Length: 85
Image (cartoon, rainbow, N blue to C red; front, side, top):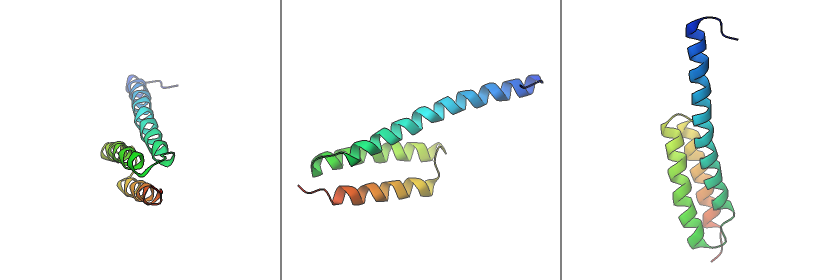
């Protein structure tokens, strides 16, 4: 347990940040899953746009590393390209 006022405040801030980061990461992962279950090329492209947006937001806010964001988008794009029309 934090003893000083400063430590208590940091603990409180860390918890708020953790919850905020968790929601962003969850949104990103959900969007990525929607790309993977897309049935058609159209649906895949639509889901890919939404997923790329969420991935970029997470990277911009340092939830994930920029290189990880690029890797996720690249892998999703490859999966969308393999969907048969």
